[in-house]
Structures are given as C-alpha cells and as structure tokens.
Amino acid sequence: MAKEKSYDEEGNVDPTKLNAFVFDQFQSGYYKIGEKVGDAWKSGRKFIKK
Image (cartoon, rainbow, N blue to C red):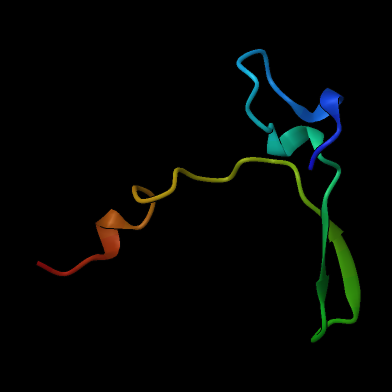
C-alpha cells in the first residue's frame, strides 16, 4: 500500500510520487523511477508490421 502523499487528486497511485527504484544486475546499479517516457499500448504501434 502506498503512502497517502503518493496518490493523485482522484485517489489513484501516482508513480511519479512513489520515489521507486530498480536494480540493474548487468551494470550493478540502482536507478530512480519517476519520469513518464511513453504511453502504454501506443508507443510501439509504429513498429508493428501489418
């Protein structure tokens, strides 16, 4: 469960407020998550062959 300050005005979890991080085992590093870089289910459509 996320802390109350991690929710948006509508009561949904806002990933940019979580201060989450990931571990990259190949480069032995931790990386902060927060910036939105694309739209799910839309960003890769231009790469799909029809």
